[in-house]
Figure 1 (cartoon, rainbow, N blue to C red):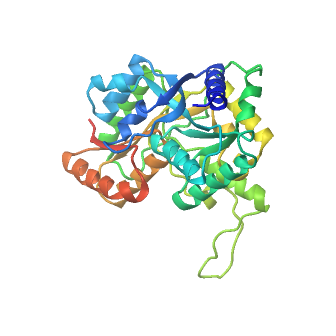
Figure 2 (figure 1 turned 135 degrees about the horizontal axis):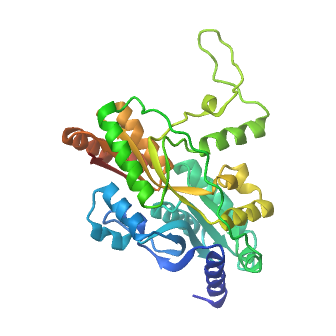
Figure 3 (figure 1 turned 60 degrees about the vertical axis):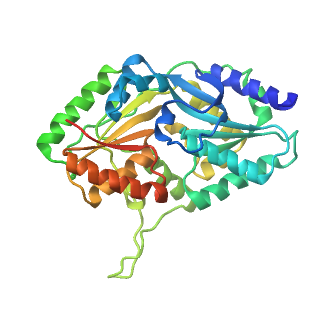
Length: 352
C-alpha cells in the first residue's frame, strides 16, 4: 500500500473511532458472515462496528436457531463498510468495490476516493454507484472524497445518543394464526428486551415515508397511476399512496451513536448528491434493525412477500413458522428467491 493510500486508511480508522465505532481494517467476518455461504467472502478495507453484548449475541443466536458457539463470530454489528482507493482505480475496480460493500451487507457503504490521486474520480465514483443501483437495485453506498476524512478528524463531534423512534403496537397481520403468534410475539418481545434491544411491534420501516417525501419534493406533487375505469389520476397524499407500507411484525433495534448522523449531515452539506438520489436520508440514522421477524403460519404467497420485506428492511431477517411442514416449504421458496432477488440475509425457522 502506498503512503497516500495508507494515510487515507489511517484517517478513516481514526474518524470511525471518533464517531463512536470500533474501526477494524481488512474485515471479512462478523455478524454478517452468517449470511454468506462458502462463496467468495469480500475483504473490505475498513469496517465501523458496534459491540454486541453477550446477551444480544445469545439472543441473535437463539433467533437464528444456531448453536451459542456461533456467537464467537457475531461479537460486533457492522454499521458502515468502507472501500478506499487512494490512486487511480479503473471503473471496474470501483464497481467491484461497490459489489464488495453490497455483498458484505453492512447497512451503509462508503466508497472513498482521492482527487489528489486522480482528478475527477469523485464524480466517476458517483456514476459507478448510480450505474450499479440502476442495474442491481437499492445499493446503499455513498461516494466520499478522501480529504474530507482529514478535515473531519478535527471536528467537535456530538456525543449523545438520539431519541428512540416513535413506536406503536399493532395487532397481528393476516399471515398468522392468533394463538400461535400471540405466544411467539411474547417470547420475541421478552428475548429482545432482556438483551437490551429496543423492541418495535409492529415496525414500519421509515425509509418508506422518506422516499415518498423526497419524490414529492422533487416534483411538487405526485399523482396516482391512472384509474383504468374512469381514466383519471388523483394526487398522492401519503407515503402509502406511493409505496407499499410493508409493516414488519416485530424488530429488535439498536441505538446508533448520534455522531453518525452528524457525520452524514456534513456529507450532505458538502454534496447533496446522497439525498437527491435517495441514498442518505440522514434523519433515519438513529436506530438500526439488527433483527426483524415476520410470523407466518401459512405457506403461500403472503409468506413469500414476508421474505422480501425482511430482506429489504433488516440486517438479519427471520421468518418464523408454526409447523415443520411450513418451515420446509418456505425454505424451498427462499432458495428459489435468493439467486433472483438476493435474499441472503433471511432465515426461515419453526418457532414456539
